Amino acid sequence: MSESENLKREICELKRANNAVILAHNYQVEDVQLAADFLGDSLELSRRAASLEQEVIVFAGVKFMAETAKILSPAKTVLLPRLDAGCPMADMITVDELRALKAAHPAAMVVTYVNSSADIKAESDVCCTSANAVQVVRSVPAAEIIFIPDRNLGSYVQSQVPEKKLHLFDGYCYVHDRFKTEEIEATRARFPGAVVIVHPEVRPEVIALADEVLSTSGMLRTVKASPAREFIVATEHGLLQRMMRENPGKAFIPAGTVKVCSNMKRTSLRDVRDSLRDRQYAITVDPRVAEAAGRALREMLQYG
Ligand code: 13P
Ligand code: SF4
Image 1 (cartoon, helix red, strand yellow):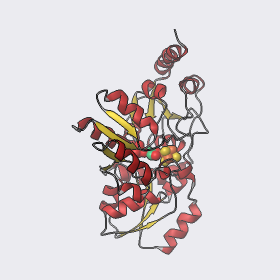
Image 2: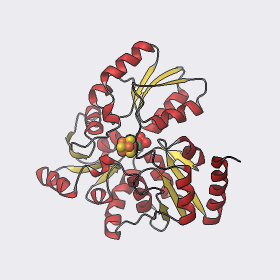
Image 3: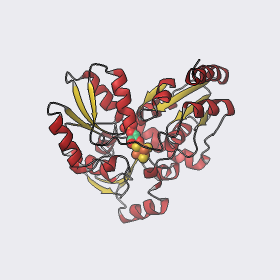
Image 4: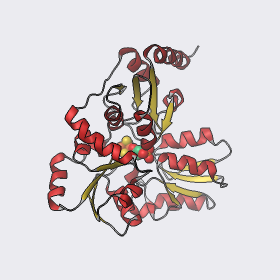
């Protein structure tokens, strides 16, 4: 039996013994995607975390995702297999910077992308993900919004909700911010019939060239349902691997160079096994922070 087969078998046994479940984000390495009980985007995984029966959740993703699961399911043990799997964007804004924005715009409501720390969520009115950001901003009862921390997602939401005024912060995703207009144009020139789909964390000038702007699972649903055979995809490479696996008759072309989030790729199958076996690393959130952050997260779950 190969090492990977052995690990998979061990993982299955440990899951049963620990009454555990594995949630994994669409950007995880392929082995981990295949070992997951639920594979999805941030919104799907948050919803799933809030409604699971198992006692232990192994979260194969980055820290803010495991933290979100712990806040939504405080009685459960939430394990992050790698403590060094963080999201640099989530660390770009500090509580003091958010408080300064609130002081500068006292009439505004704070809409916070889930790619943020629990401390920041605790100071927010409502959270959002890339899948529901437009809907959340459109629906909240305020004409003025402080939208943090992603400037690219914020500017996309502003373009979709022109009737509201968004105050943006200067955060960004180092993976998505690297897509360039020239990459989209050159790839389109090689595949003129392909549909261009991009994640809203890419820059506004890249969004301007797209046929569709979608969250990772929104992309999956779209390519599955579309009669088109070729897609140029601007997001982290793990999602393209899932698309290829699940849509064998279709072609998925990276928009320019392959872009990889090293944080998402840290977790291996062995880390998942170790996490289950040694119950590491259990996520904890200060109860007062968790209560306030939980309000903003549950508020989000009411929206689509
Ligand atoms: P999704 O919510 O679209 O899966 O994106 C999460 C993320 O980290 C994007 O970089
Ligand atoms: Fe964070 Fe970007 Fe990695 Fe997503 S892809 S986890 S936003 S750094």
